[in-house]
Image 1 (cartoon, rainbow, N blue to C red):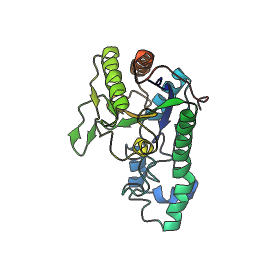
Image 2 (cartoon, rainbow, N blue to C red; image 1 turned 45 degrees about the vertical axis):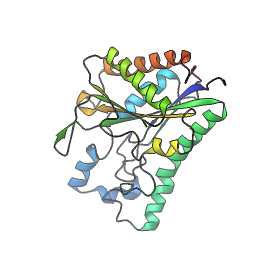
Image 3 (cartoon, rainbow, N blue to C red; image 1 turned 120 degrees about the horizontal axis):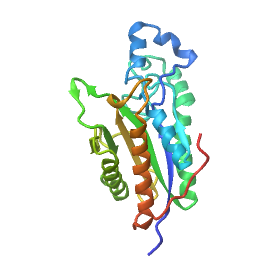
Image 4 (cartoon, rainbow, N blue to C red; image 1 turned 135 degrees about the horizontal axis):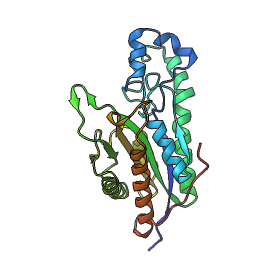
Length: 256
């Protein structure tokens, strides 16, 4: 039996900011647009901070996007109806293509290239995309503090996420951890696109979702929560060295 590939971590944050490029500021001058920018529809508060914390802890590469998802949604496929928001979908086709060329394609290509380089070295890529979610959406209260999204049809992802979930519950027993919540891990997204390119044994795409109700002053996470996320992931990766699907850690490029 061939020896399983080693594991290399790469961290991404697709909704790391609500920045508007100067070329499009005129589209966001109204009070309602500014309010939208500051909301969860504009970005994922706290996500980039946590992504940085994880990347630093493991010496892993961090790839992120700070342009608001209201300009372009980099976590959606090119033909998805939510690729452009209600603000930008009215732009001429040539302008929308310019947005894709400047802000969408570079991020997704860089993530894909990083994963491909890991695979080319003979490792398996563990891609953790960091997100945060609003506590209430469309009048419905979300019943989790942390969620781990994965594709149930890919056993390495499923097994790792369930181990990570158990480790998270041990590290932070007061928090509710759910699998494939508040979204389904197999729904359209960057991880979904990468799964089409890489085998389950070579690419494990996991989205970490954290409830924004846990944010404290300055849109920061409690240090105890950050430690629980990092240490639980460390435990899972270390324990995986002795498991048949993942044997050890193979650190990738220098973090951003």
